[in-house]
Image 1: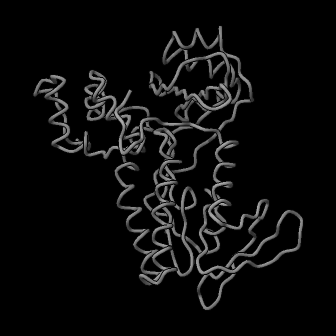
Image 2 (image 1 turned 60 degrees about the vertical axis):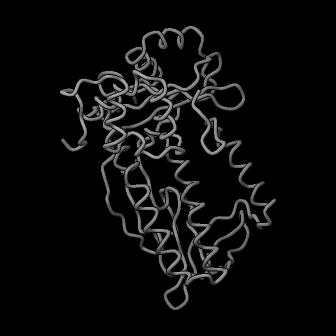
Image 3 (image 1 turned 90 degrees about the vertical axis):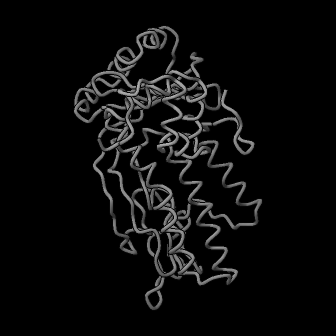
Length: 328
């Protein structure tokens, strides 16, 4: 078990069926007016600024809702991003696809393992005594997966961790259909403009391989909320506050973005093979890496020159086998 960081001593993987209700109820308790089943069809502009949204609740009549700031948290296909013409940049092609589902009968905890043939498996305990199982494979395997998802899914576990493959076949009971995801490309989008901002996948997406998507969405939402508060309270100009959010988001997410895109290739460069191999030799360093993945430990604890030096010294990596440059 990893040591607590700022009081955080566990990582949870709730399903959206549970998480969404928690968020909605939290918003209501905080005093927000919550409209469910409201579909945004367009934005409302005035003199070049976004001043609201247009849409309808269920099948009701179309109406406008006005706001000083419109925040698009509406995912990859963001209506807000499209209507404001948010520019994509630092785009990197997606390397893989995912199949996942939920199982009973398995007590595996968290696993995150890469095997041969550009295949990976992951498992996460979640609510209702279920375990989410996922496989990620290079896109070269997509055709064969589509033809026989069940057997290809099992075969991936057989390939990566044979003992888990056997247990999955004998004890695992799939409770829901497989969900395939052909990942969109990795990207940043312009995060703000006059009267608007983007957060979550609407403004920034990376491969789900490292599991940072939801954590980053919460971190960036908190970051954006603080800047919006500054603008609404007139501590600073709203446009200036939103621009600061966008710059800070890009700066703080860049190492995670680069790291994720590299690992998602499922064929580690020599640098990462050396570092992750060293980490695996010591539980303390494994805990540190899990803390980085959870977003509660800064990446420099391992991936700075000082962090790497300490890691190699403590686990006894010979001088001629050490690697310090990810680009080498």
